[in-house]
View 1 (cartoon, helix red, strand yellow):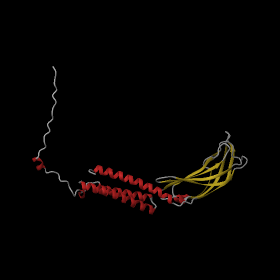
View 2 (cartoon, chains in turn orange, red):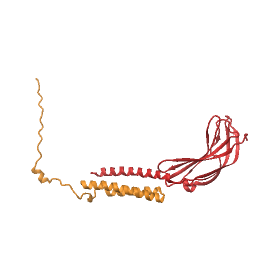
View 3 (cartoon, rainbow over the protein chains, first blue to last red):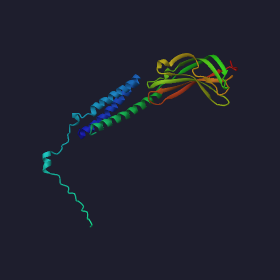
View 4 (spheres, one colour):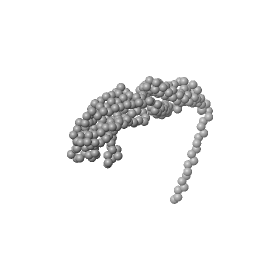
Length: 91
Length: 167
C-alpha cells in the first residue's frame, strides 16, 4: 500500500465500524433482540475486515516513485573507512 | 497501516472498543423501562412447628405464591432470580431473613406464575423465638442482564403470624 492508501484504509475502517455499530444498535433496539444486534455487528466487522485489511489495488493508486536502479549505479554510495586503533605493545 | 498485521490489529482493537460502548449503551437503555411487578403470597397451612433437638425452632409452611414479573424483562435481560424470604425481628438480631423458596425465570413467558408448594428451604430460627412471632414475607428479585448492571428490588408483604404454641 502507498501512503494515500494507508490513510484511506484507516479512514474506511473507522467509518465502517462506526456505521456497523450504529446500525446494529438501532436495529437491535427496535426489534428488542440482543442477538440481532450482535449478529449485525459481527457481520459489519467481517465486512470491514474484507474491505480494509487485504492489499487491494485501489489502495495503491499513488505509488511511490523509487529511484531507478540504473540511475543509482551512476552515483555509488561513498565508502565508509573504519579507523582502526593500533595497540601500543610494551615489551 | 503499512502491513497486513498492523491493519488487522488496529481493526480488531477498534472493533472491540466499540463493542464495549455498544454494550454500555444497551445496559443504560434498561433505565428507561417501565417496571410494574406485582405479587401475592398466601400461607395455606402450617404443616408443623417444632423445637429441634438442639433447641432451635423450625416451622414448615405451605405457601401459595402468585406473581407477575413480566414487566421486569427488557431486551437486555438474561434471567430473573426471584426468592421469597421470611423476615422478622428477635431480641438477638434486629433482622432475620430466612429464604424459603427461590426460582430462576429465564424468559418473559414464565414470569407470570402461580405456584403452591411447601417451603423449599428449611425455616429454622437461631433460637426459639418463633412462637407467636409476626413476620413479613418478602419477594426479592434480581434482574440479571446480558450486559451491564444487575438490578435488585423487592415487594414486602406483612401481616403474617406464627401460632403461639408448637404443634
